[in-house]
Image 1 (tube, rainbow, N blue to C red):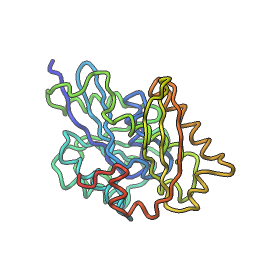
Image 2 (spheres, rainbow, N blue to C red):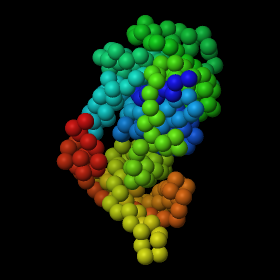
Image 3 (cartoon, helix red, strand yellow):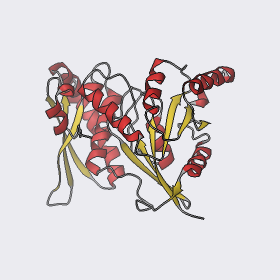
Length: 298
């Protein structure tokens, strides 16, 4: 039997469970999860390899109507991916009825000839199966999906069937990455994302989407301890106060939670230092977005 390989784009509206799906398939977290929408800002590659195939999943930012330069960048990242992959998975929150946001995403799918699976996620929360079928029919009226799957990324329901279905659409090909590699994102990117996830979990209201995390230093000291210095950028002084918290309590919580997870990922002790800086309206400044690692040319 020929070994198969290919690239699979994961698209959908914000907060439908794309990152949860990737993390479940890989058996570890490479993409941050938050109940707040538009959490993913870059295309994140997750690599799944078994005896028969290697699937490179590209977890894209949620496609949405942008309100600033960062939002436009996120949409561009997601849409540009579609033409260069072997298969697209449109992941949908099965508890939500088909709406204008779904039509907006489908309008991007219509621009490419790539096969697309409709993935109804969160089926563990479905009480009315009849309404679910009506919802699926609404999607199929809008677009010609190749196949439809019903899964729960949280519980893992039917994900094995979906992986088998993906294999049937992949061509024979090489193993692009070593079989034990699960992502091609650099360590600095993953650490930045872990810190940002903890801020998303611990803060409310306008703060989450106004932050960016940049690793400014990763260096071992003379004792071999890995020192990590990270800057948390916010847009307003009031947000800085929220991130730091009363007597520094909030930033200590963020640092403690992030440190525990980074230690697990890297498998070694670290020293993590967090700073907070105000950069007004950074989401609309192309020079600042580039400084923060967003490749606006792609």
